Length: 433
Length: 75
Image (tube, rainbow over all chains, first blue to last red; front, side, top):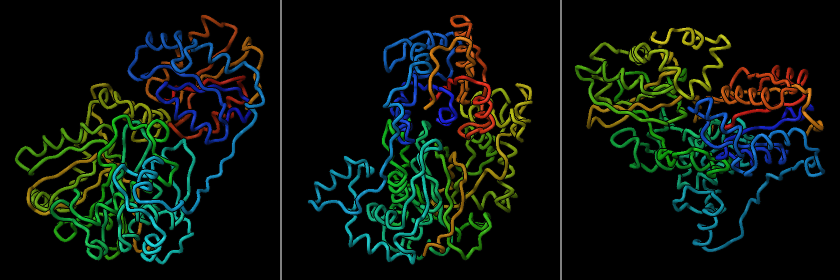
């Protein structure tokens, strides 16, 4: 689109499964008739001969020869419709027309404003009660989000976040946590084809003030605060970023079950190590929430037992290019301390040193190729060194600063989970009280 | 939107590889197609520095030296 503005006729080629997204993006950016041509999905892993067949074949969305679409896109004269952009009124009515419970629940579902579970209808009284959970005014801008980096940003107010918090079933005393998540700007409803979502980890005194769970079942649906805060994060992400509708603003091909709600509190009291937020530079007495992005894979283990190193190496090296977030029960944490991991940093350093693959396998990954290879080619370390490695040379997959460790659980089992999750940021909850 | 030329004969087309996995190979095949079928069209392969990050220098080069652009593959 920027090339068109610079006077360069352009055509964008996509795979056909993205036709809806491509057209919606063009429309949202005010050039609805920007030229596009389509080939079948997939392109990844195809041979040169198969790609050639696409080029010599038909555009699956029009049925016409692909190259005819491309050449006409670059040479056919523009008409009046091409030169007319679009503008959007992004304001939505503050209030819906009154109606019965059943009709309103159906309306919210039909408008893709829910997670397909019943919501708490956001009446004026309920939203006003939620707003009492913060000292910030209702019309204050909290932040902005978008489903993916090539979509438009949408910004939102305290009141809009409150509406979604009510819908999730949250209580006003949870609202500062929800606002802190909204201020993160990190959407829990990414449009990525890889089906990503976010996890929120809460630290500090607010965990006990609002009755969060950091013990047995901490990561599961066993606590009102944990579950509704996570649900509010998911709902405001989809509703305040311009949507999360399959084929339009959501392209996660498999979907992610953690996208309903993924929020828990760290068990700081039973952990032998410093809390997560202290490791990120905040005082222990401050309440904060940390956001992790991805959650594409989950692995688990028990122990550590005699062969823990071999097992942990296998888990670390199977995690593609997203760094691990380790969540471990206090029993596991104490046993690691007995094995010399007296600080989180020691175990993290061990994980970084032992997350390794032959260079050939490391680079044979769609997302390593798409996201990291350009950095390597540009000479950015540590990727450049990994690219220079011989195919059988072992390369380190992650830097220590990319790996995170949290203690949660109730001591019922020496269990740990490893999520593929990139640390985004830690946000003060106290700032949103 | 930019005005279109009547034909691509003698024009320089930039084939912009958007860095998705295997897009480079697709663009190479596209370049070969032009070489065989429309040899009067000059094609040049180019890539931005990073995925999903606007490369203003690359855009400026295309705008300065090109007559058209094919970008792909979005997937």
